[in-house]
Every structure is written in C-alpha cells, then in structure tokens.
Image (cartoon, rainbow, N blue to C red; front, side, top):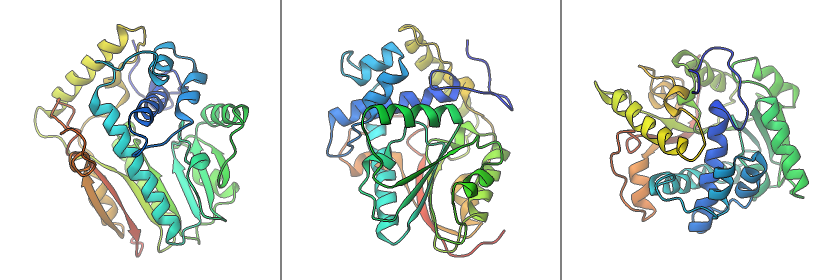
Length: 306
C-alpha cells in the first residue's frame, strides 16, 4: 500500500508522485498513436519503456489494449492537455519570449520535440533522479534538444529559485512558466508559495499556464476518493500497486486562477469539458473525479502586486 503524502517524502519514476509522470507519458504514447493530429510525442513510448514497469510499457507500446485501464477520458485528456501546453509555449515564444521554465518536468519532452525559436532557453525543474534519468535516456536514444535546454535538479519544496538562477535564469527577462498537472500534489500553502514565487520571479510581460480546480462541494471529495480507489484497484489487478487517492492533498485551497489574478496576472481559461468539445472528442462524462470543471488557464503578467 502506498503511504500517504507527507513533508519530505521522496519518490522516483515508479513510486508515489513520480509514477504519475510515467503514467502521463504512457497516456501520451497511446494518444500519439491514436490521433497524431492532436499530439505528437515520439519520446513518450521509449521513455516509458526505459522506466521498466511492464504493464505501462505494454500499454505505451500498443502491446496491451487500454480497455478499462486507460479509458477514453485519460487518453483524450492527454490529447487536449498536451495540445494546450504545446500551443501555450509556441504562442509565448512566437510573441518574443525566449526564457521558458517547466516546473516538475517529469518525462515531458517539449525541450526535444517542439520547434522552438532560435535563442530560446528551456529550464526543466525536477528532482535530481528524474532529471538524470530523462537526460541519460534521451541521450542514449540519440535525441537532441531543439532549444538550449538547462536542467535544474531541485525539489520544488526546497530552494529551487536559487538553483534556477544558478543555471542562468534571469528574473529581469519575461518568462513562460508551466505548472502542468502539479498543483493537486502540493499542500494548499505550498501551492500558494509556488504561485507567489513564480510571480516574484516574473518580469512584466511574462506568461503562465496551469490548471485551476474549483473547490469541492460537500460530498465531492468522497466521490473523488471513491473514483480514485476504483482506478487503483484496476491497476493493482495488473500488478501495478499505486494508491492514487493517497498521492493528492485534499481539502479547501485557494483556486489557482483567482489567486494568480489577484497577483497581477490577466488570465483566460477553458474547462476540460469544453476542450473535449472544441477538439471534437466524445463528451466528458461525470465519473466522480470532477475533471470536467477543471480549468486550463493561461495569461500574462501586467504588474506585480506582491
């Protein structure tokens, strides 16, 4: 049984929160094969294979049908999420941003697969063992970054801004930030600190993209936990033991969108449900996980209020 999250806990790409990065890459591999017009991540499958979890490798490679393990919501969710952040970064760099920071980069391969404009510097921030694994694996595959990729081996609960500056980050230059699939795995106060730090490190004209989940209504979180337990049981039956409900921090928290707006960011948002519709995907049904109302938000900083 996976233990509950706590301060100072650690993980790798087969355990705890780290395993969710491998599962996200697995979903991207399936989605790439299913619909390359929406997502094209040629590195997702080989990265999952290198991690070495049999069932995830078989799914990523198409050797095992997704069936009930990876339903259309997860696959289509990978399509729209990846497309949203891909377009965010391309729009930001086309607007003249040359400094990019990907927080909790996991097995994200954008530094290797997006057509970055000449002169773009991409900083990837994650735990040292995750950064080392991805860098080594992609080098062994013969992959080369399409930007000036700089790794920042730091836990987001530690002094990552100092490590970021040491890698060459310049707070005086506008930055495009992403916090993709991250906030729900932070304690509420840690989420606020992260968003505050992003704002403090951002020059006017910076860009940001993340998800903003509405706070739960009474009974919502019990339904979410039940849904996550069902998902965990299905995976456990295939030999992959990960208790999804224990990975998240539940309870009230500041919603990311209004919190960032209060700090000077001008944001636009679209719900996952509407993204499914906009991309002609099957409607998103309510399965108790409250995914449909999650907003993908992005925008720019006009002024700081910290």
